[in-house]
Length: 294
Ligand code: NAD
View (cartoon, rainbow, N blue to C red):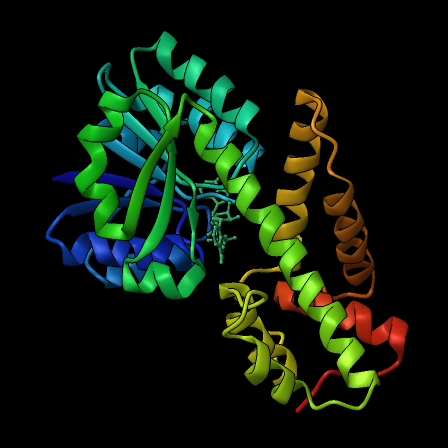
């Protein structure tokens, strides 16, 4: 199938590679030319704008940083809606505000374009493996139409509800991940200061009730002092911003998320915005004046 793909960053690039590997023809666009060049080197065909991508493809996938980027790529000048024919399907896999998905879907609908939101969890390693967890909102019939394409990039794809439900699910995911990293950091700082080796603590508790995918992924990074991304603090700030805004809109107070948000803001102010979110441990290291290391 001929597919369009817009947004060739940390996640988009390996996702395109998997679509190519599965035998699809992929037309790509990114504002950063070197990202386009890398996708072309893998076998993709370049376009000069989002409009040009949509002119050539009946299915367009977007993987962009946040709501304003998706709005401009879809609804802006030379955007998807300028080039797409009625009946085209837009699959937005970016993590954005659910309200923004609803607005973009409405604008698409006015032009006869069908849209679903389909953000992902699993990060770069699972984007490379093609085993992302995909959470989808929108018309269930459209979800069924694109299911096989989603499963080229994912290990699972679950329809969660109407348009925006995918991104609401992703916000729930991001709250749990952020709070889990903070809980792990707090607990491991306690053991460090009390003189118990964090590696022993990890080995002793990872198989019990406190164990988690987050603990397994992040404790080795923290104890090695490796905070290279992965998933950047700045992107997690974006997600918690969207979570807090959504929570306030629907009347769901998020006291713990707002507290971790201030930890992330402290780290950003310290120049760590481009480090991995496991650097939440560095917040605790600063306030407790100790390092959680092997
Ligand atoms: P990234 O910043 O690496 O990539 C985004 C890409 O979009 C960049 O190449 C950028 O040039 C491009 N872009 C921005 N504006 C554009 C425009 N107007 N037209 C065309 N291209 C444009 O980000 P990423 O890490 O790939 O993340 C993408 C999305 O996936 C984000 O919403 C992020 O929250 C989400 N996500 C990321 C991870 C992760 O581990 N990195 C995991 C799960 C979900």
